[in-house]
Image (cartoon, rainbow, N blue to C red; front, side, top):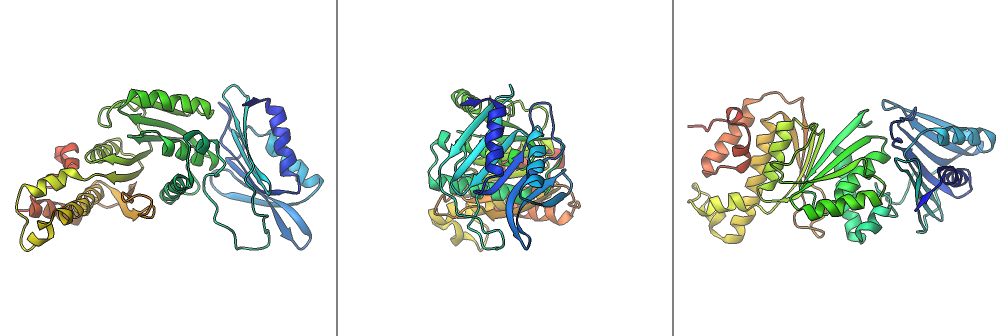
Length: 389
């Protein structure tokens, strides 16, 4: 529900200076107006001189910390921050949360959560696990998320946090989610990056136009339609301009993951997060020809062949990405009890020397198993490793 910005900021001020504050974050920017700092975090801390308000601000390069006594010094600092054109305020107290987002028209969208929070213990270091995206965020209500989906979102965001640099780069951060489906992770990525002080411009791509319409309406409902847009089209052919910095491809089925990786390479995307799903292509090729000795028993059973095809497919993808100037980690990003498709390819471009052993290893694998990965076909032929004779 829209509120006047003056009234909403007055409510934020009362919470920041009240006795129940546990943590608050200001980040993002209003349309066309960047704040003087990219992010501010506030929390009470217990010092010898008594409780102070700690304010940590970042200009995008390094943080600055101030511990201010309660009263006039803290009030003046809070008023300065409230005067900054931040696009988002997130305030946690012992009795609930308040989420304030400024729309492109300068109105305030306010969401309040009533989930009780544990009282902060400023002088201690043992804390309950903190989710990277507030469980009371209106996104979760909009998508009907249960506790399991919240955990999946948190696991994804932790993988994203481990991939991107800290602090985040200044200026617009362009993100594309290929095969975004219902886009709950697309929105989660936007929320997290905006709260971190980035200026994310996110595009979701899905082949279904009804998903585009649904997701576009949800972006308007969540107040981020200027920053999160959707297009209908295939992963291989959808128009995305300008090229993104970060490419997401989460549970794109079978060779759709290869199409996403090929587009990321062609864009020279700085970061890639891909969670593969359904490895049918290599499995089908393994069924069509005998396995090299002595690996016949490895693929004689259907279930073992399918599982080996999963491993071989993602090994070839990671090795080929390394041959194209990406550092690649293959990690488990969430416990298998939540989803059996829990492997994540996490890639960062640059800083990788053109090491012949990457191409040699790839060429020997495809030659020995007599397979032609779809990713190899999709990438430029003059940049492919030559099979070893």
